[in-house]
Amino acid sequence: MKNSVAIIDDRPFFEKAIRYGLKHGILARDNISKMEADGLKGIVQIADHFGTAYLRTDLETAAARMKNLISLYLEDFANGDLQTAALSLRDNSLLSHSRGGSEMLKRLHAMPVDNGLYGRKPDPLAQKIFVNERSFAFPLTCASYRAMVRQCQANQMRIDFARWLASLDALEALLTQGNYKWVVPSHGPVHSGLAGLQQTRDWLKWLTNAMQTSADKGLDLNEVLHQPNVPPRFANWAAMPAELQRSLTQWFPLYEARALTR
Image (tube, rainbow, N blue to C red; front, side, top):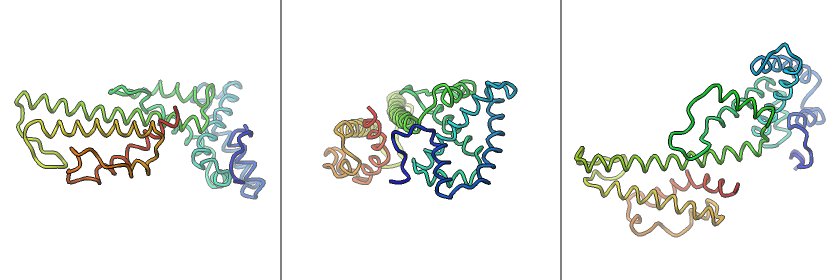
């Protein structure tokens, strides 16, 4: 517990890591001098990217922005452990930590914020505005960042299932129009007619409902994996129970994480 961050300590994680490193001999004066030189370069680069490197206010903003980005990356990378964070500061440049925080925000911006099937189109300007806001005006803590990532992952999961169901609808429409006769799935036997498509749709709907119900009940993955078997209509599949276990292991943690944040 000695390396854990105290809840009442509201200093930036970056500052806590430096203090810890100095106190425990992980960081020395030479390391601090190198950080100061790196920091000056980074501040000028960040100020130039978001404004101008020639105005004092932009330089001051850039310094705060860099501190926030480094803190975000360090706390996530070290999982709140100050010793790990101090070692990272000793062994890597400040610029790499700042870039790490910036990349985290860029990845978050690219993730789906809702359940729309078409997602967010790449937009460099919108991404820049997002990083601008979330690194200075409304900086993200590590905890809030992780919560937003979990929500976006849950959105992506629902989008993936919705797209899967939509593809089955499209295949069914093509079949009823006489565009093909046989279905050759990547798993399972070759078949004709709608039975295979309908069975897959039935499985996906049952699976997503079962995972949502289990998450709402507060069950964890281990408990879900040891629940009673699938309904009789799926029990004789050759891939059972491996298919159920694979699907639960891949998808249920996202349902569980989303339920915990509500």
